[in-house]
Image 1: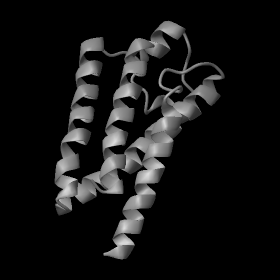
Image 2: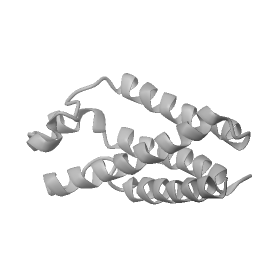
Image 3: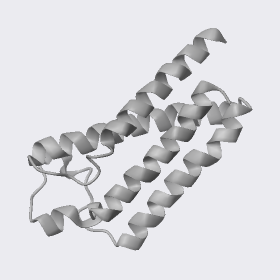
Length: 136
């Protein structure tokens, strides 16, 4: 398996861990239960209330999609390479979002514990994808 393929697989597993943290700490209703008003900069990105089942299903779909791309990436399918770039960027932004929210709220924010893993794995994947693109 290639380095980017391994990192894409690791990113899928990191997202699974991240999703478990979000669900365990009730990200889907964090603002409503914590009685906080999100700062204006993130309020448009935050869903204040969501059924836990819907939130869990959305996370399962994201994780399954990430993991399903890996074998196609290894075959160098163009769409899978594009998907790997998108996933890496999305997870870096996801990690940044959770850490930024924790700083803006000045308290624990669900997803902030595993956010550095998303940031690191996503950044490493971006680096490997760029290196592989240079070699091609």
